[in-house]
Amino acid sequence: MTTVIDYANDTTGQLDEVLGLSEHLRDALWRVDSSGAKPVEATGGVIIAGMGGSASGGRLAQGAIGPRLKRPLVVADGYALPSWAGPSTLVLHSSYSGNTEETVSAYDDAAARSIPRIVASTGGALVDRARRDGVPVVPIPGGFQPRAAIGYSLVAAMEAAALGGAAPSLRDEIEAAADLADTLAVEWGPDSGEDSLAKSLARALHGTVPVIAGGELAASVAYRWKCQFNENAQLPAFASALPELNHNEVVGWESARELGRFSYVSLEDPGAHPRNQLRAELTAEIAAAGADPVLRVTARGETRVERLISLVLLGDLVSIYAAVLRGADPIDIPAIDSIKASLSSR
Image 1 (cartoon, rainbow, N blue to C red):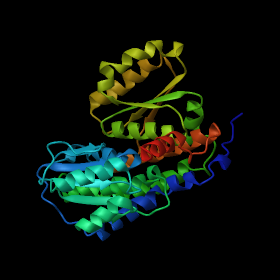
Image 2 (image 1 turned 120 degrees about the horizontal axis):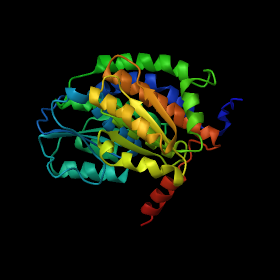
Image 3 (image 1 turned 90 degrees about the vertical axis):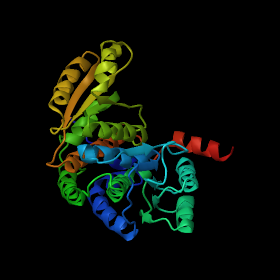
Image 4 (image 1 turned 90 degrees about the horizontal axis):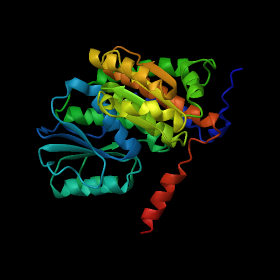
């Protein structure tokens, strides 16, 4: 008998925030325009400075843009920018709260080097600095968990890449991806059947340590899945990228069963290099020696942005369903709160 997923543990409506992805994507385009940010001839490339959910937008932007990148697009997740960054580089400082200490420090680093900047945030010290310095601010709406604002951080990163000349504008693809997200939210959402893809995946993964893998576009989404399982479901989870994992991690699956119960999720993009598509198939076969279950998930959509968004939405929903299956509230992140409290007192 199939266990019905009960959403009583989602006390703050995190599921509703996930289902709002399509509207977040559309709204984010308007908010970038409202910032007044102008094109910058960033011949040195574009950097997305941020942590956690705010940095995820940058990683996903790398996957969404893919081979269309014309200049470097780099994520800087620390207290300082890369040593090579300078006036020919554009930096998007992305922090939902505006008080993420690493991102605020990276802003000060950029200011000291006279690096062109854009800020995406709800407020805080980061926006205070930007207003002081005349730096454009993309105003992100408040009231979310940072990880639930992924549509905003993704669009801000993609638009920053376009403003810096690192990529073409992909607004049409973003709009199409929002339309697809509307359709998939119905197909996979809470009112779908108990055998819908998202709910079935959550049940299959229940009681396991998920290892999520993907190549190219799907590699950035695999990391997003891992982070969502960590925060929403409060579970250890790990992500790896093809083809690199074929040169090391794949060896470990043979002994996995004696160590614990692992699952393997292969995120697959039909637009990936044919050899990576073959590697995904072969790796899933090898992982079956130590993982139970082995699940292969194919992206939906015509464009790179659509396919990426389909996998992002699916992973976000699966992580929420996984949380409620184990009686966890997706809002709770006690370990992160503890670290922040300890840092603020020292």
